Length: 407
Ligand code: ZN
Ligand code: ZN
Image (cartoon, rainbow, N blue to C red; front, side):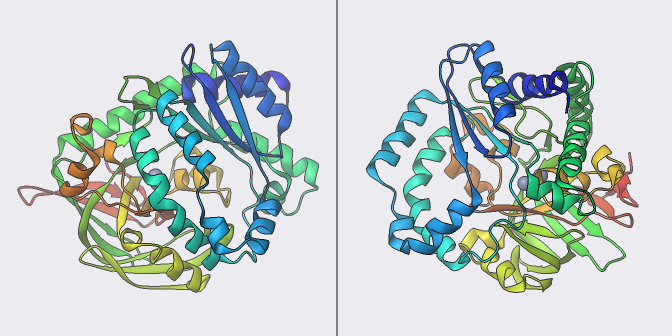
């Protein structure tokens, strides 16, 4: 890929994604796949006025080794220096960037029960730190190609050609053409207008139906609102949490989901694939599930904690979104969730609650916002999906017809 184009992509991530402020620190997590691109991003951060940019490189084979040779107690221990680092992040509120490039199957064979146990031990200790930072720091997830990921998406091509193809797909989804920062602003305005219309309706329930058997009703909080595109931190700094993004999303009310939903794309969860699966809900809770592939992993996921069996997000994405039209299965949620309507199991987003700035997280949860250590998106959209909005007065407004916006 041409360096000028990659430079523009790095600029988009730093300016429109994280929106790095003068004097702010930046923490980047990245795989080992694209060190030259990480350099470009770091340079753009400093050009934007960053005080210090820290890069934490990750490598899936190392994660597997740690998982195999360390005890659960060791994996689950949060060391004093980690706490100190978390506290430092609470004090300094750096922007964070996650540059995903991992192999969707890269953690295959890892002992997932061990991962879950370690996470259960770590989560309560780390939670107060992450809650202290919630909505107070800018964050962004974007992608760069990794060799194994590219081969998974383009199995018929040699590695080099597959990498180039994946770059093209990533950059096209992120609208990197000419002035990418400007294009992003226009796209953001579109999403904001959709959300404004949805929020004007006063939606109590969304009712999903599709030819595959999906028939699901999900209840909303009266204070809930659809969000899309750029987000704004409590300090008033705007940022784009996901590049790309095509969704208008809302966090539903815990306890109000009835019916069955069929996934329409495979889900890559903790480095393994769950495919051709369904979940049945009663009183908001996932009470039954099945899958042709990864049924056990799906059950593990849904029982990670109490909130893992409840919904945290309903997102609307038309089948004619650019990523959907590209027709490519990325095996990566950042992209696949923007090609399809999706739901998420687990944690809801407090910033989808009206006036969340004045509310504590406890108050948001009392309104019905779900809480969990997980937030896992899975795709449910298809060409036959209809979605109706039921309003407070009982009237029904079509939102989606045949997989696309009905308005
Ligand atoms: Zn989403
Ligand atoms: Zn999500």
